[in-house]
Image (cartoon, rainbow, N blue to C red; front, side, top):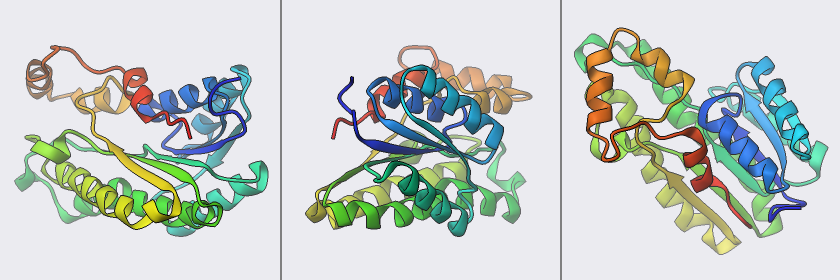
Length: 230
């Protein structure tokens, strides 16, 4: 069995894209994985993929915008698997548009999913990790959160917030034996990115040209950066 045998991981946004790749990477390492996703049918499918790899998989319908939904999912995970060792916050959303063409409803949605979703997940998971004196959290940010991205001003802001929050939280919980890190990939070949691409081909091509390797990252490449050993 792999390096994560007997450990339990929970992945938000685990039903597709980078989240799915993280679930399967963790499963290959022997972890029990709770797949949390807004769309339950996607979570079920990925949990079954994890089980096919020989890992225990649990599908959970979770809305990261709602603290109660996230907390209930964490409690279900702990009841099913007895502990929670690893949290990966991969749930996210985006919308391509110049800032002046966006409205407050979009801002609220991006903040609720990309930033508050991370807050909800960490707040619900940390008490279990603190009680055990160990744990690892990985928050999916974005290179846009470091340098900004045209057409993604608010999205960039939410990811910058995730990076800053991750740094501060890491300082707070290190004394409890808990590690907190952020992974900030560039454009990655996911279903979300391909939905965003429609009607924005020029911007999409510019994003690829601005990438040193002149190609999109693959979800599996990003997942490897998020797979933790302890």
